[in-house]
Amino acid sequence: MAKTHSDIGLVGLAVMGQNLALNIADHGFRISVYNRTVEKTDKFVAENPNTPGGLVGSKTLADFVASLAKPRKVVILVQAGKATDAVIDGLVPLLAKGDIIIDGGNALWTDTIRREKQLREKNLRFIGSGVSGGEEGARFGPSLMPGGEFAAWKELQPIWEAIAAKVDGKTGKPIAGAKPGQPVSGGVPCTTHIGENGAGHYVKMIHNGIEYGDMQMICEAYALMSGLLGLKAEEMGEIFSEWNRGALDSFLIEITADILKQKDPANKRKAFVDIVLDTAGQKGTGKWTSTNALDMGVPAPTIAEAVFARCISAIKDERVAASKILKGPSKKYRGSKKALIKAIHDALYCSKICSYAQGFQLMRTAQQEYNWKLNFGEIAQIFRGGCIIRAAFLQKITEAYARDPNLANLLLDPYFNKMVKQAQENWRKVVSLAAECGVAAPTFSSALAYYDSYRSARLPANLLQAQRDYFGAHTYERTDKPRGKFFHVDWPEPTRPQLEA
Ligand code: 2AM
Image 1 (cartoon, helix red, strand yellow):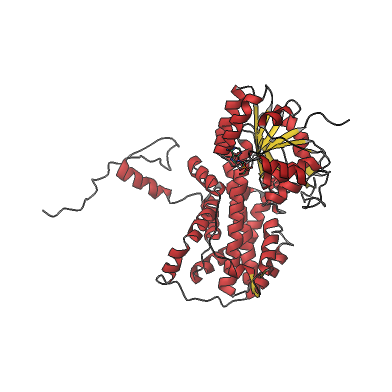
Image 2 (cartoon, rainbow, N blue to C red; image 1 turned 180 degrees about the horizontal axis):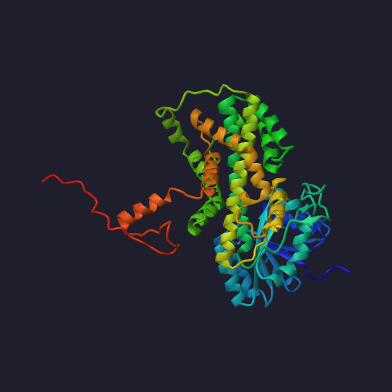
């Protein structure tokens, strides 16, 4: 018997919204759709007449809400910020107790916390769900990171699990057919209840911060191979393909290999990457991650460096002008090409471990701050399919948290510890060569500084604290007295420059 009501509704028919709606309909759920501009709804429904679940287009928000089975589930996919609030404000008077709004946009997690609280006061439920994987992911299997009340999640779970990417439960590998174009069932869905209120959007933000790090680290490997060895794009493409068969096996390495092998569509003799202008944009989630790291006092320098690397890329004109004035070293690398390529691989791998360690440290601190209970092994597992940072490496993180759910830092896990131990000589070699030859490697070098700081029982902060005591009477603790006891030295008045009479 045909359904009288839709299983779920979706507001916002830009590409992400359309693709997620089609993914839901493909899995047999009837879905109502609404868009502020009605023509978009009509066109979308007319273009997709035969989905397994069925698409129902509504011209008004009231008709849209009336078409949904109770408790109503409404997914919003509009721009994060004001548009999301506007849509929520429009929906609230039309909804009834227990109905659920699901925000699938890239919301700031603190907005999600606020919205969840406001809607709870109105007896409505709110799930802030990270949706990762871009347009392809939304269409054929994203990684989904829902946060909110657990009972509300249980209502959404069958749909979210059906449409999410799937990975093999044992190996964590995306299962065959989980690739774009082939919806599948079976396997472990890349979605899990992340935690209360803003936890899902928080974890999505960290995912994006990690993604910024991964992308920049790959760019540094490329810059070093090009700058130190003079390799051409095509040759580097082959190297990345090779790396993609080993420990670095990941979506981003795979697409990098493809990009480097691509020819310029306008001039087939040129490599595509060589004609792309070197200024990178950003939408803000990497910045949010870094700002949050500063706010919470959690060291995440590698992720922040990746954001700053985009910022410095953006001041192209200034850089072009500076390049004519500021000189660097003329030293050239003269050693073995093969050895350096291996060393760059190892530097990338070690830096990646540090960047992920920082991302997971952020989640660990945030869970205390917001009283969430995060399952880090599961989070790494759902990053394994659908999303941009999907990588073989994530299975190792899942395994690390299975060994010790309270792991203080990924670097301390025996597997990652062993990997860094084996590879760090190469990592150091690459960072020092980069410095000697004048190739910027901000994330490689900041990751190494993070590693060296984290493994230091004693940092030069003793001197720093003494300076603070000197000029600001900020006091200091002593190495030979219990922690928490504070001392102060009566320093002499600092000598000040004498003003001429
Ligand atoms: P539109 O097609 O009417 O512009 C991405 O921009 C999506 O968000 C689009 O579907 C867009 O609808 C929708 N959107 C943006 N601002 C909105 C608002 N204030 N209210 C409702 N939908 C909005």
